[in-house]
Length: 212
Image (cartoon, helix red, strand yellow):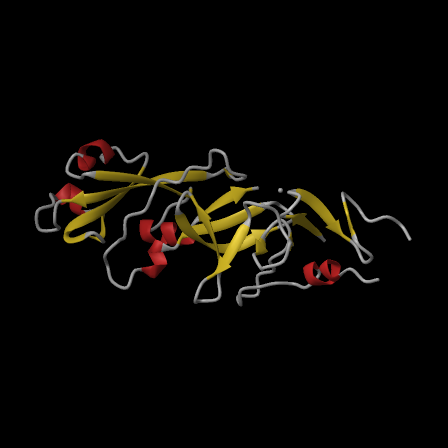
């Protein structure tokens, strides 16, 4: 008898941007079994892109490399803004989850609730990113972590968020949109038993298919 989960998890899934979503990632459905692993659930946004929630931030997935176990993501707030105002992001924490930052990453400090552009000094105005999403009368500034003016400029701001980006030169806004890399792990998962499953043509097995 054919195993329906073997056929179900063998179907390539995509949100619409032609990225293949397969184990360990999955788009959750209502079945008992998952074609992925807990903690790797993805959603699809209105633009047909896969997204993942990390540390209460919604990240757009630009590329999944299953061979290298590398995921390129960027915070969705830098794409969802309908104007120049920047919504408040949250610091990303990878502690206790199944990702870690890849090599060659740096950090940008986002400074919220800074003085308005008219009140910013010349040195701070160079780092103006946009108006604050919570109050358009104040500013959001962005500085790389090694900028010698970071400490001085941050004194005029109330909130600081640290965002990882790839370590290369160029415009900070584009760096935030380009995102950063995370390193992570026909398989699936039994939600009821909370066990890994290998979906085979005849039935699920614990680790691998048995020869027929």
